[in-house]
Length: 271
Length: 314
Image (cartoon, rainbow over all chains, first blue to last red):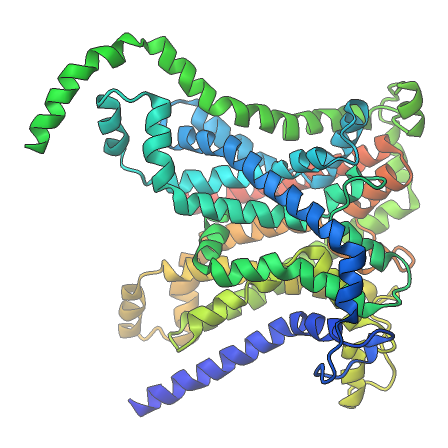
């Protein structure tokens, strides 16, 4: 009895140690962001004399880019969910030989590298004037948001009992009304999961930002960080402060929406 | 009584629904799928076809002014293979992919087995472990770059302080070390994903199997070989395939950490494809390289599908 208690405590301590090692870089990012400006690489283990000059500079130089990222990520979530949700419902409830074809297409799409999409979109955007624009980046980011949302939502909607919708249909509701009034409300949690991940994907996007913006206009914060890194870095505290600000959505999601995150990671990949 | 109401309303309303006609309903069904189908064609179908075409064209900077992109057969592919960097990029891509997958899977499996034991905080610690995977890759790159900095980075300072090193290691500035450093960072990023998926696979193995195994004397390593691994194989193969498909196209981490340098030591097919298209504006050659990436991904996917089919047949 006491023996197993000791073992449990030992495992807890080991677990904490593993977490400390794995999350050390994240801690270091925060620590370095709080060092006074100048060469923050010589930072001590603790920010004993915290300075917010890095954050002031980050907000000055990258504040606009953070807002751009926010707009792009929100737009991607809205557009992805609008497009993916009805399709996920169809793939989970309609019986048709097209269902397996659709799923196969989604599976294959996951193997297409982003650079292929960027190559083609660049030439197309150039012609229709979507380069350096927020709508252009929203559309490009939907390439990860839509398939992922379809997979997540479908794996949830597969578990909906057909009788639920049938009852409404029998009452005279059309397909669309049954979908909006019954399916959507029940699917709230999986919609949140898909939305959170869609937000995170496009917030983190770097490839499309790098390739589809060549000047001014739409500059997400990931590109801002990359430009900080481009030359010899002079002010690590500003770079790290921007990094911390860019990490906020991930941290918030992890703390506020823990159960959705694990569900999303597993659901999107395996099911 | 509830049944009675249902039947009554059904009888009353059914004619109306039926009157709307089957064809209207088929049309609605199509409308459910249409936006997604259009999006998938525009965001995946079009790029794949466009890339195939571009790889056969002299598609360069001039094209954007003249609109002309003459077909040149396989010239882009021969140029790709003849490029001095090609074999190095192939080797680097292989090393990067195999190294990343091997370590993140092994460590991920170890941690998943560890967290499978029941102890206080297990669930909380496991979910916090996901953080490196959720961070934007460029944020991780920036952070690791400061950690790996040669002169004042915390890693070198710690190693020297502990007496493990005499001189600072140029983690990202030495051609012989940079690829290892980049793989290390990618492993760090990939571990959480491996832990989460493998852990969920482990929880689906019924406890009874272990109880029965215990009666037969299967504990510890022998339980792992005879019970855990056979039952985890399907999940493990999904994890490995997703790992390959993802790792083979990684761009953010390499660009953020080394930009492909020093002396091209960390150039991969993906970074080369990016450079050909968006630095040199030779879109034809960039497309040829990225088509090779697609082909390699498919190759692994086919191996995987054949492997899982065999596993199911058994």
